[in-house]
Image 1 (cartoon, rainbow, N blue to C red):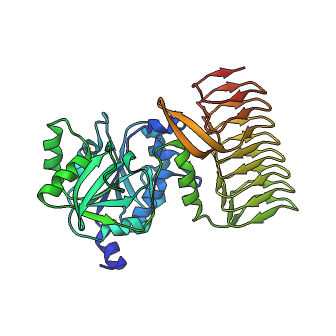
Image 2: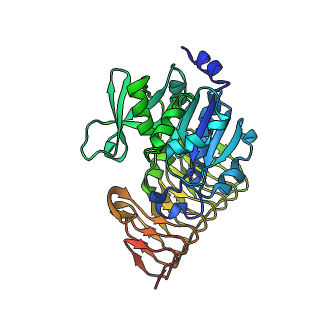
Image 3: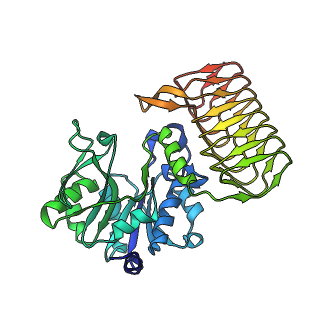
Length: 407
């Protein structure tokens, strides 16, 4: 089956995107929006999933929403602006992924695909999923399989999916992308009666009865379990960035590589920008500031003179004072840091939901609407939760609680 056949065969197919969860392991970045709406490359993660579907001719999309669903609905609306026809199904009680699919049952009458709205995928990944007959699950290799459902296969057929096994039995994992049809619903109902509401168990049961294809792909699949994983998604997103020169670029600005500069931006004299970079509308980059590869700046970001930003995500309305250094960091919307912020990267131990994670290279993780005074130093791996207040000269390490005050 060629790409043209895939597109033609996919036109009437529907897609279910799972987007109801909070994403609690994202720390401070899901305080006011669901994980699927976290921006990478200046677009919500969910938008890349929608785009991949549309690129494969799948336009009818059901989005299962729950936590902070108004953020998703207000951004995508009916999907027309994205080339899709999007409808929404509210999962009032988030029992599991199979329960989420079951909530869509009245609107599913043929073959459909299921995708996780917080995994970045490309058109090739979707084409491989669409280009086969019968139930299927997309699988890939991972260097941390114990964080996922580990897949056991026999030839090209699925044997089982084992969720987060105690021992590593394989480096093949379940990507959470499936091709299904209405015959799956009796299996979902049967397992629900046993208190099991997750799709991996459903697929394992299907594998034992009707058979399930284990589909491998060299398409893009990038997952973000934790905040530092967002930097990998951002790097992947910026591979597709295009050169755009909007706004005002003063004399003696150096721009190298692919850099997208949004409407209304001002790039002051002496600034150095090395792509891939993406700058949202209304940004101001101060004199002699340096923006280094794989950084994305949201709308209305202010970067002070002589400040350096490298491999970082700065969400909307962030303001960094002059002579600051930000590396390998994720900075939430509305964060204000005055002069001399030092958030240099290095190895760090990060605490998320009470569990410590060693991260080889990480800067700061700053939650939305936090305020940092002059000369603040943030140790690698420090988590500053939303709306924290930090006095000038402080040195931060560990985790600062939501609304916390550091004197």
